[in-house]
Image (tube, rainbow, N blue to C red):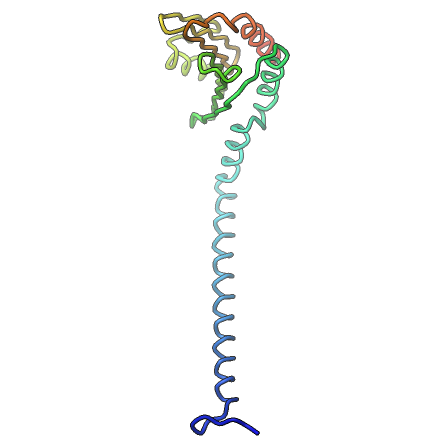
Length: 186
């Protein structure tokens, strides 16, 4: 026995519903293929324009991997051997193939170590002169607020800033670590 509604069979409506569902599925599949293709095209564009490589290099540098990894690891291990923790790691790319890292010694905002890595020694000298007013391999600048000590070699500068009444708490250890790390540079 077949049901009839206003002279039409139930099978007629279910065929139309199936047709709508099939059309909907086809449209959704087409949209997902187009979206995936657009994503793939964007990834390919990044590969051919070196943008993907550049993004990966920046990511690796900021995480202490890549060519800078051994230097940062050596610094971390040398401070750990002195019982000093490098905390609150921050990094910034200078936009000219250089990067800077900043650490708080044992979490204290009064004791800051910065590592500046530049593309070459000439760039290091120029940028350090811009930032600190000194382009030499060694410098000490002291004022009422604090004391900043710089040690540099080749394309690397290590900077220690101590402020407040605790200026001398870590200075001897920091200078020993700086000396050790810079000696490791080839």
